[in-house]
Structure formats: structure tokens, C-alpha cells
Amino acid sequence: MAGSAAGVLAGSGLADPITDADLAYARLLVGAELLAADFYTAAIAAKQFGARATAFLERALFNEQEHYASVSGILTGAGQPAATAADFEFAYPAATFDSKGSIVKLAIELEMTFLGAYLGAVASLRTETLKQPIARIAACEAGHLGVFTQLAGRDPVGNSFPSPLAIDEVSGVLDAYSS
Image (cartoon, rainbow, N blue to C red):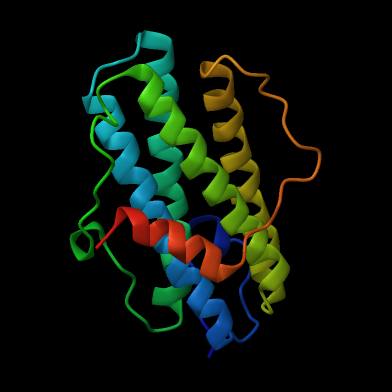
């Protein structure tokens, strides 16, 4: 199957056929982006942060929305529907949005998962023209992770070689927050 993608992925000149395995990763990444957008929307609405940190949350939400547009374009470009927020009901542990600390703690967990998901995708994708744009999204997710690590009072400079996650590992984390 050949397809084109929106956003950054469209600029990649997608001409390679997209494998079923690559489409499975795209579906997983769409789910991750929808969870991220839902989380950041709820974190902003909780009003637990000052102006500067709220601006970080708003920018992260904007990034996740752009990532969703790009990754969902892989699916729609291949003639498949992309999931939307209406397809999921997201749920978080009790008191997640009751304090800055609990929001930051979950943000770190989620961003580590999102980073690992994109790194795993880069390692697994067979469609060469998808790898570079997906790696660029991983770089953005690493930036989010650095911000929230710093908000937690820890060193924002992390692991020299962040770990990629396999598709089933990412799916397990996403399943914990969605139905």
C-alpha cells in the first residue's frame, strides 16, 4: 500500500509502500498522541501550575496535536481511518490532577513511554521515508521529558541512550489509561 501523510510526514515525499507492521505502529502512535493530548488538556485545566509551567503544558499540547496530525496522516494516506479522541475514554489514577507533583510524576511516566514508543518505531519501521520524521517526533518527546524531569526537581539531562520500547510494551502502558 502506498500513501501520503500530513504535516512533517507529507514533506518526506512518502513513496515507499507502507507495510502492515508500519501501519500497526502508526495506529499505536496515534493512540499515544491522543492520550498525550487528553493528559495535557486535563493538566492545564487542573490549574496547578504557574504561568511559566502552564506555558510548557500548552506548548506540549500543541506539539502532541501536531504529532497526531502527522502520524494519523500515515493511516489516512494509506486509505485507513485514524482513531480520534471520540474512540477512547481515558482514565487516570485517583488524584492525578490534584497537585503539581502528581501531574509531573505522570507526565514523566507518559513522556518516557512516548519517547520509547517513537524510538521503538524508528528501529522497527520498514518504510524508510517514515523513519526520519518519526525520529524528529522522538526528539520533541525527549524535550518534553526534560522539562517535566526538571519540574520534578531532577536533572533534566537524562540517559545518553534512551531505551526504545517494543510495540507490545507501549500498548500495555496505553491500555492502562484507555478503554
